[in-house]
Amino acid sequence: MKILEITGGEKLSGTIRISGAKNSAVALIPAAILADEKVTICNIPEITDTDNLCSILNHLGVSTKRASESIIIDPTKMKNNEIDEEFSKKLRASYYFMGALLGKYKKAVMHFPGGCSIGARPIDLHLKGFEALGAKVTIDNNRYIVEAERLIGCPIYLDIASVGATINIMLAAVKAEGRTTIDNAAKEPEIVNVATFLNSMGAHITGAGTSTITIDGTANLKGCFHEVIPDRIEAGTYLIIGSLCGENLKIDNIIPEHLDSLISKLQEIGVQLEIGADYITVTRGTNYKPTSIKTAVYPGFPTDLQQPFSIILTQCNGKCKIEETIFENRFMQVPYLCQMGADITVKNQTSTIIGPSKLKGREVVATDLRAGASLVAAALIATDTTMITNVEHILRGYENIVEKLTQVGAKIKSREI
Ligand code: UD1
Image (cartoon, rainbow, N blue to C red; front, top):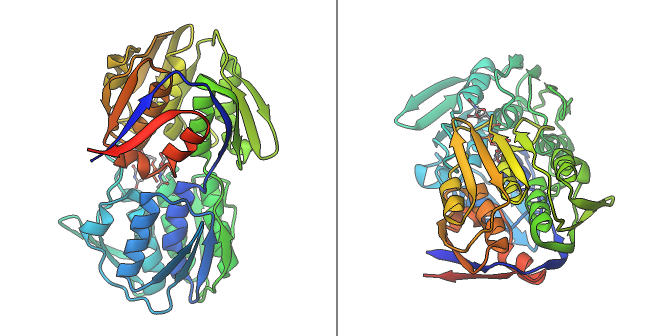
């Protein structure tokens, strides 16, 4: 088992270069199989989620060649093999193969996806979308068979603006006959990144990034070259860390507009930021004012940054609240933070944090990806050493986290026990 050992109290300065967005990359890799030719995607983060998707591609007979941050995906010899549980359960985004295989072959057979246990996370909206396009869905013991004689474009309304359902329906609809519209579509930047990729292959998608996406189906998609956008959640996590212990810490290679909700909350509590065209420099402040956040779909405050942001709230002067509206189970880090000295109570979907608290190093568990990121942030300002176990969760989403933090002066070590 891998653990992280972090000794807090260091000031972090220098530059952290942000990697390609995990949530884009994990959709772009399955989307690549829709092409009839090779595609090249650059700025792919080296994280276990992208490695696991490449294993699924190889299982489907798709060759993958990685060179530094790029990947060449060649689907010309692929076969529509069943995706077993051993592959699907390794990550949430394995579900994108459902839409992509359905689009390409009119049939997908795979098991229920895995991912962080942050709530029930059903995929009913994905399946309803496939059914609206003409597919029949059969579920047998967590094994999903989705098949259609023909996929026919149609209007689809999503009850919830789900990121996964929006992308998955887009993946199937690009190869459907006629026009599909997705209403109440999710608007996250990752969706725009996937739509741009599909359009570079020859798809006809308009409106990505708004709540109505229109897709005119096409029979053939060609090879292309594409770039993953910078990871706004990784950037946000390091901005939060910089607000806690940064000294002119530059978060580089980012799109600041993707972080507007976080930036305005940081400025509201008193963090000084220098915002450039593709970077933000942050220095730790003092006497942070208390505030409250409520998570929401983009451009609202991202649920993925709620857990890391809670560490800043432990350092504010007074009472703060976090209301989590997207997932039911995103406070699992709280007992560990309380052991470290934080004053946090959780009732239903709201946590109340009273600061400022002095945090002390303890032995803690990363229960999910962003809970793990919040424990890293807490450990960096805690006295003594914090030992974090279940680090696999963190490595699923943060490329080279140990190296990136070490380079800017953190005392962080990864070791096997
Ligand atoms: C994606 C992100 C995740 C982020 C989340 C919200 C990926 C791989 N993961 O997850 O990091 O936290 O968006 O920004 O991109 N829902 C249903 N039925 C469905 C689909 C979703 O009820 O068929 C519900 C979910 O349980 C949740 C809400 O809709 O309460 C939003 O989920 P969704 O946007 O789909 O999240 P994911 O795509 O799983």
